[in-house]
Image (cartoon, rainbow, N blue to C red; front, side, top):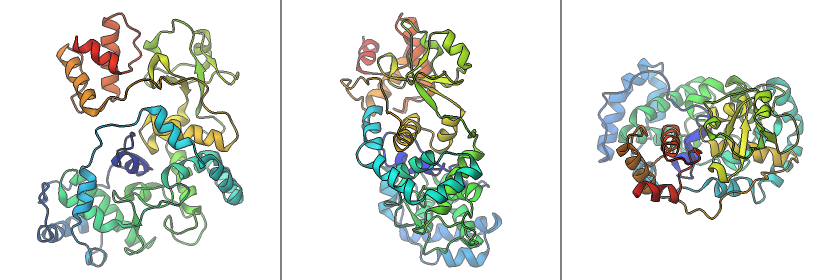
Amino acid sequence: MATAALLVCALAACGVSSRAPGGGGYGGNFSGLPTAGGQGSEAGFQNWVQSFRPRAISAGVSPGVFDSAMAGAHFQPSIVALDGRQSEFSKPIWEYLDGAVGGSRIATGRQMSARHASTLSAIEARYGVPREIVLAIWGMESNFGANRGSTQIVPALATLAYDGRRGEFFAGELVAALRIIQAGDVDSSHMVGSWAGAMGHTQFMPSSFLSHAVDFNGDGRRDIWSNDPTDSLASTAAYLRQNGWRRGESWGTEVVLPQGFDFNQVGKSVTKSGGQWSAMGVRAVNGRAVPSGSILAPAGARGPAFLITENFRAILKYNASDSYALAVAYLADGIAGRPGIQGSWPRGDRTLSNSEKAEIQRLLMARGFDTGGVDGKLGSKSVDAVKAFQRSRGMVPDGYADSRLLGILRS
């Protein structure tokens, strides 16, 4: 999601982190409110609503809008349960990409490209974001509008803010949602989306909507909820443009790394010019010039490698998952008629559980390699720790954590 987008997949435990547009909450510090602490009730929720009212008003929400929007809000335990649910396993990147890019999604994307050709041309002309990228995000976020969600956003966000596990984040999103209603873009009854607050064809969180949504069709409302996807698609392009998308440049390309390549040079923190990469023996699979950027090898030395540009980083602002951004990139390439990933994934690798990932973090920490904590999520700090351990053992420092690494750490 636009940092709203991030949330849907992430919170649904689909193997990628939270996302697109938005994410961060709107203004203000909402700490100090009484919360449920996992023991919510309808009475407690209604007390929370009244204690939250002056804070929302101080953040710019009118008393009338607050009272009207919250009048029918009730505590929803099922949403609290969804927020607390986390799968013990997440998909390896190749399975995630198979699902995201495979099936009928490319064909549907091409159909939508033809159906909305004039709108997409106008969006591309204004924001410089290729239509296939916008279409790919639409496909990833809601299956081209088929799965936009039907949950009432205000009661859902209020429930999540009251519950307390991530209360401050959702309190900020609730204020943003109320301000959208106040602006007249939608009324509370038609403000629907996912249980986590993401809305519309491309799943904007309310805070992202306030920052990036546009009225592209000129009807006076930034309408991402109707069947017409125009404002949603344009808002997505505006989001990417405002987050660094460079007109006329690609997201990157798959590359072949030379024998004996120094994997210390792999990662988003290392950026080189195309000429520098070429001098190191890096070659683009498509035979074109190697662009400037950084190299990703999400499955380590035994999987494909990708050279990503600033435009890939713009997609990451929509959803901070490398898997998600690669899925968008290759779904876009498929819609545009370009070939898919050429390299082979290590499909025989066993998927590590979250508890096994946490064990890797604990064992690394015990050996003096800082993972930044033990949470079962192998983020950039954990990857750096894996690389440091691999270097200390004379292994290829590709940062890839698998069952073999776990076995070595256990021994």
